[in-house]
Length: 388
Image (tube, rainbow, N blue to C red):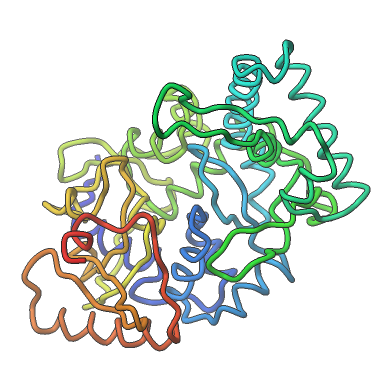
């Protein structure tokens, strides 16, 4: 069995993720990375900048003008930004799984909270009404949809027996179901680059000519193939976690792509594509500052080989990774901003002089790029929170 050392995994990470070598464009970076995490709108911009040096206008153009990069609800009910050509595979697999889960949960909840006696019928009617409105009226914000469609004004009480109980509108839940199903997408953003105020748009209007959702097996195979190219080698547990899928679906996909089993330093087995077994050349010294939930930070479930002893410093209790500082393929700290926007590196360990200098230079570059904007991530790491 071919053995892949942790050192080689870090070399692959540096080159496949563009952290040591960079990418020529936003589109090239998106294709190489499989997708960007987009839970926080700013993270897409920061992730792309770290690998391409792109401007905010460059990414805005890719997202909203050329539409080569598209936000989509997918794995683990998380928003991602995918390359356009990968969407049909996503719709047929990871997103479809989320859509079924969300539709069923919403149907149960509207009955539980007294909105209707027939949850399945209500969800079907609500989704149909929203889709009809978008197809006839065009791109529409959530607030405008609630105004136009009275059934979306229904509210549900969350934990009414608790002090912090609150009433929430059903509208976001309906849109979550539709977004996961792939029939609507987040169109033009009605706010700045750090906010998410999408004008919801029928998919056929935003992406004319795009193909239909793929068969589930083909969709998962395409995602696993892309993941292995970007993140491989990885274990079965890594892929199951990343996809939010079942072991059965992942095992079938690994067979479909002819994945090759390799040995890892942990003693576990990982997988690579059959034409991707050669070593990557060592990239030399490199440092990078990545945002919260960056795809590199969140690419694997088993992280010791690049995280070391810093799990509790970087990740919160729910497994969300905060902004990170990387040196030669390892997370060595985090970063934060001062009130004037200055970026400050927060080490999790003692840095060498070379690492401190390189990461300091990165902080200066990021400070200049942000130009006074402060990104207040809700996923700030415990390491940084302790110093705030």
